[in-house]
Length: 358
Image 1: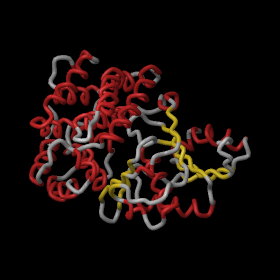
Image 2 (image 1 turned 90 degrees about the vertical axis):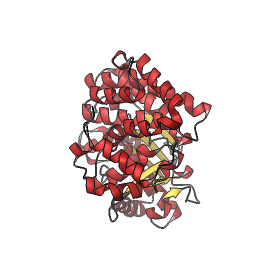
Image 3 (image 1 turned 180 degrees about the vertical axis):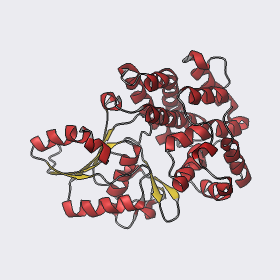
């Protein structure tokens, strides 16, 4: 930061990280260099339009020359949204979709505290419009942070449930990127290495939170998965999970984990060879997954890390499936799914995930 000649830095984070002292680990050294800091801690899980607008108001009164986001995916997404509107104007809803901004954002340094979303290094940003209960997918090259930092030591403080959910989010990124219609040899290499590391490290990281090898491997895995989907994009797992998060305010990683085996079962007819490769990598790197087909291996891994077994268990309602499916088909993440589904097929996938995982 001193080399960037920064004088005023706007830090986007959350209240918990401030309370447990992680924020001070970042701001203390900056202040010792004479850099003025302003904190914005009003970021909630599944960040909203209101969070972005509140951050913009604080930023305008401070006139920062650089931003730092410190946290997990919600914090990074909120910071990206603040940064793009700060330099491009309008409101965050104007940027839903692909490459809607015309100017670079305020420079952003993203310091990551979870091993899952890879938001600290991607062009993706997800913001919930609380008036419509829809998670907007904003995909824009200008949203890419100028610098991202992953420290597995910070990640070792994650509780088991968050470790599991974010880890399954990373697995979903890798799987969807590998079967994407925009996949390439480069994204394939990143995705498969991420799947290998997750199969090995995620159960250990959940059970042994201070196992630093597992934490380090998960930090690399989620970053590799981010490199994969940042270029190959995603599929219907994310398109559908975004709607569940927007309507019910559910944890994104848990929604992905529940939907992943059902979406990939739907994709079998178009992506069987690639899904078979994924199953082999999972089985080769975790004895508990050996000999299982891909769909069963994904379900087994979800069981090992104690992911809930059904959408019903999360309070999702069948009567909402029609609206959820309609909105999922509009989500940009679904455009690179290996099969383009009908409304009825998306409803059918929701129905399958509503039943208890067997």
